[in-house]
Length: 342
Ligand code: CP
Image 1 (cartoon, rainbow, N blue to C red):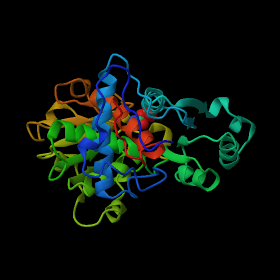
Image 2: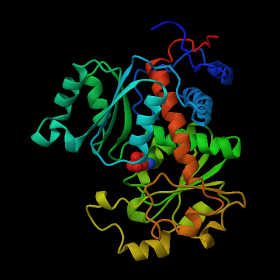
Image 3: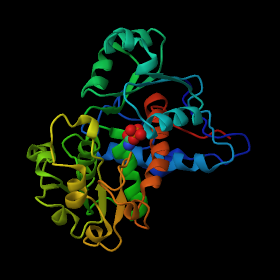
């Protein structure tokens, strides 16, 4: 690859990627994106700044730049996904990469092939990046042992979902102008949530205070050990977490991961822990409401909150595309100076 990356289409104003950050002349110092835990605060900011730049491309008439021309990306999804799989595919295509989608149901996994053998076989076709979603924590790490491609974790069990936290961080920063000093409430099924784990890392590294709340059976007390300092609080009731919150993130009840009864019924969950307008009134007047999707309307979130004026749920999806373009770009091509050719 040359030492410049062309980010312009014919007759379209070029994007000056390096203008957004003092550190933009370097890519990520990591070969893979496995979790937010491994990233320093300045690397997270660098990713968010790069994503800001890529957001503009989706507003153009021709939504394509040649930045990753000649690169091959494999999306390997062992779990259902609407937002993440689609946005990784669109992100790769808008960067002009060759994108191949492999799902568990159409792969030889159904014939008994292991994850590592699948990885070895994909590696034999020389991809540059593999994006993986898998129900087991650590699956993305495992692929790094057998693949020389960069591995992007698109959600591994209850471990991490780094691009979700990045798109959440981008959405908060866009609407609040900052992350430092904000009070963020994350409510619901924390126990099974990779979104919560990645967001706790990202938000506390960037200086927010995070309060976790939900049914006692779904809020593991040992999560506090994940974070240095006092940036993370575990609340007993959701009202305490909502009080004065600048940001409320509602998590999905993961019925597919509930191997035992963590609460009596979905109806009781909605009554005691669902986010409705009355509970939301405890938060700051300019609170923003987020949900990673897919939503269980009427269970963890009432429709008038999900569709209300404080909701940024679809903004999150739009920002997901920009974040995934930034991640693919920085891992596959961003280690070079992204200068603009004229
Ligand atoms: N937020 C999220 O990961 O959604 P999908 O499962 O649809 O990808």
